[in-house]
Amino acid sequence: MHRAQVDLRQALAGVVAIPVTPFDAQDRVDQAAYRRIVRRMLDEGVRTVTPGGNTGEFYSLDESERRLVVELTVAETAASVASVASGTSAHVVAGVGHDVATAVRQARHARTAGAHLVMVHQPVHPYVSDDGWMAYHRAVAEAVPELGVVPYVRDPLLDARLIGRLGELCPNVVGVKYAVPDAARFAAVARDAGLERFVWVAGLAELYAPAYWAMGATGFTSGLVNVAPRLSLELLTALRDGDGRTAMTLWERIRPFEELRAHRRSADNVAVVKEALAQLGLCRSDVRPPSHPLDEARRRQVRDAVADWK
Image 1 (tube, rainbow, N blue to C red):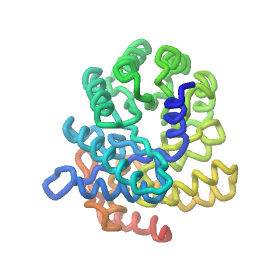
Image 2: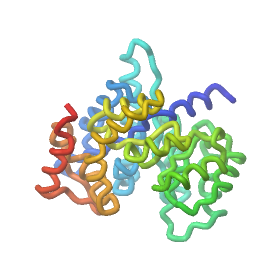
Image 3: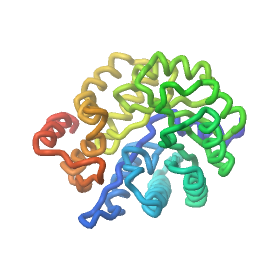
């Protein structure tokens, strides 16, 4: 395996941070707040960041804003790593999606901007055939052969053979972000598609990380990492060490916050994270439709959920 491909695989085997996209009072991307949040993660030890994830409100951003958050992430990551004496590398995994032409254009921009991988959002078209899913991902992967590619899988019916075949056709497909809330299904898909062929990332964050880790995942995504980077990294360490007791103790601390995010099919997923960040003074709590700001009762619940995190 080529050394660059090994590095890209290693980038996914850890905490894959999904930063929020802060907005200012004029509903523009707050660039200073965004860089501050990313820098805070990196300073705590996070080494993989995904601008343009769902926690970043990917589908509420226009194309220029999606480009901007990738560029800001690359710039902040480079600046942060340059200041670290050890020179530990950090990786940017740019989220891409929408129609095929747009996804390809976004992937090529990510390459030009200096990202290392792209995460391909599951197609939102209401009619997705197996062959069409394959064609969509091949178009992106073949457009940027120099980058690692990570399909984002949310469909519980997606055939593992499709994922395996995509890996055969596109060597740069190095990982899979699996976000189906079914650990047994994940275990079967990962083994049938290729447990060692891909890096399997638990795409439902800390709440599912211990179960998916037991089934073969070696990384997990995180939106909580915006608020409490150390908690996410401590959970990663416990999972890597096989320390189930510590992992579940951390899981219990995280659970109230993550359950607020998951409530009502994740209706307040991003709003909860941004409210916690606003309480820390790191950004405004504004979200864009179809998300909605929290009411006072929910804001108090967020405050209570993170009360002992200091």
